[in-house]
Image 1 (tube, rainbow, N blue to C red):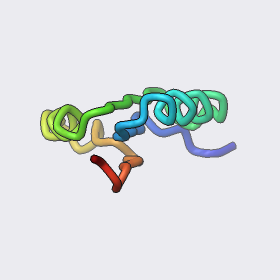
Image 2: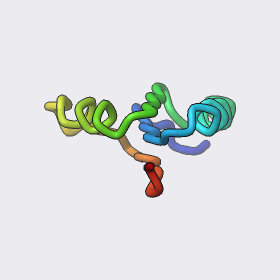
Image 3: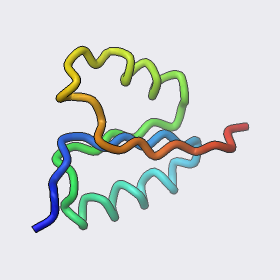
Image 4: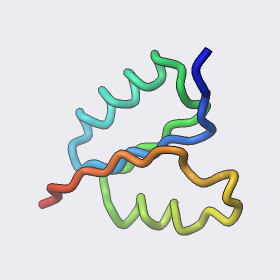
Length: 67
């Protein structure tokens, strides 16, 4: 049995890519919650609001080629 993470975050300006990644991650059942953002500022604001280290995303998928 593999580990199930509490939270995975996806930050990518391509909405279609976000939906595909979310779908694959949910079908793999590796995270309880998956949050995706198509705007870097929104994604970083979400991460900055996290106060408890236990709530911090286990994995962050980040697009490095934003326009």
